[in-house]
Length: 174
Image (cartoon, rainbow, N blue to C red; front, top):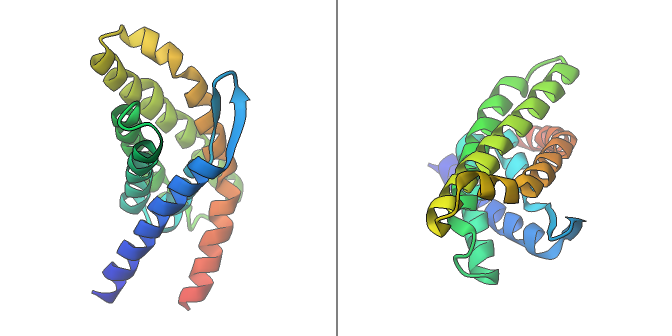
């Protein structure tokens, strides 16, 4: 019971962290798009606490962020897309976490980050956005290409931090 409560509290902190990183650290990379650094929190939670916790952090972090900034605009597709990303990253993290081959783990993380972000942002988010706005899917996917590139890059670059934080948390538990 104590372990479940601890994980729930940590996940709540992760939602807040995702929101704060997304709100406060906006690094512009494309014309009207910035790096969503909240994905660093989502990646860390997927890696350290698993798919469920990381998915909740990514999905609810988006919901809180959107409610604070723009209401529901853009939120349903983004939140649902983060479910796909979180599940994929969390499941791969479970497999690569204890692997002695760091390069193989980094390669698996990178491939998963790209594929899951394509699925979540170009697939799920674009589909939901096209249904909500009654626009063709390919138009919405084209509009989300910048988000896909920037979000995948943040997730890939978060991998070393995830490994470092996981080591820190493992030490603290012993």
